[in-house]
Image 1 (tube, one colour):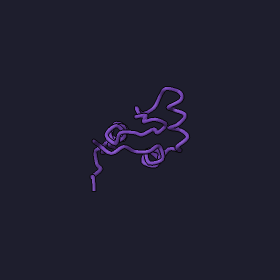
Image 2 (cartoon, rainbow, N blue to C red):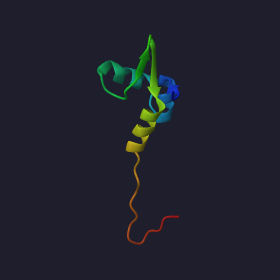
Image 3 (tube, rainbow, N blue to C red):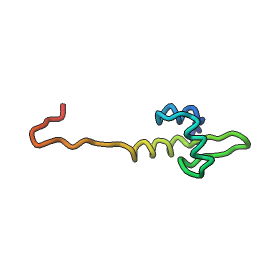
Image 4 (cartoon, one colour):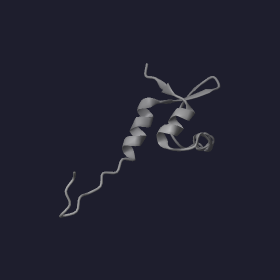
Length: 67
């Protein structure tokens, strides 16, 4: 089984406040999560996918060189 992340760990990875993730859960939006009793956890693969979806690759101009 893959490791599960806490709200605090995910918030740190995404650069968000933990309360933002909590609010998103209560509003029915945000990342999918796993609820085990009272514990809320996030799958590492789901968080990694979200980060990948947000990736921006800048385009080089005509005379620019990637260094």
